[in-house]
Image (tube, rainbow, N blue to C red; front, side):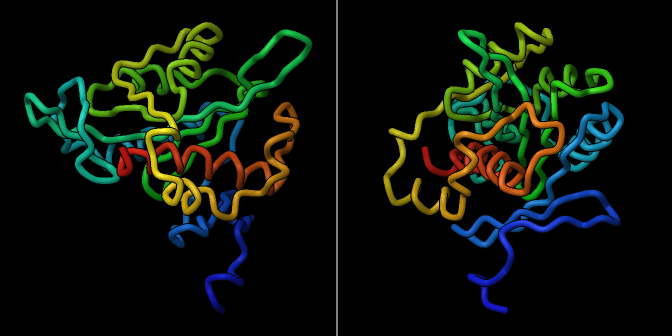
Length: 212
């Protein structure tokens, strides 16, 4: 089957996980959608275990490769994590509905409005000095989740699409379903288009590290 005919998203009932294909580079991203704190805790722990050999230092400014950021002064490597938030809007009120995290081929989508409890692991993950959370307007997203859930982030890099060349943006966004822009992110069950859209948004945030 040619790459152009591979489904952009599929669901594995055995694992309850999605596989999202980024058409721009052919990357397969294992995507976990959950409203369970225990599932989020397991995802976070898997990521921490995978990158536990990264030196525990803070502050980053220069991109080394897609996953590792390097501090100019200390040459300390940090792990980049794409971060994005989807919101619900009622009148003038804007509230975070989903939180997406992506690192390499792993993505987590939290349905914040339906969580059985908030994952404590996220609080320690966001303050772990081995990681830097990256995204477009990430400061605004962090402010929203901090105001609602008291989450603080130790290392963050706020980037804008304007700093990238148009070709890079086009490749990264290739295959994103247009229906995602106006989706109801309060939906109890996210559609395939919504899962694909949310996953690729956080994956693009992750890829921005290689483009700035």
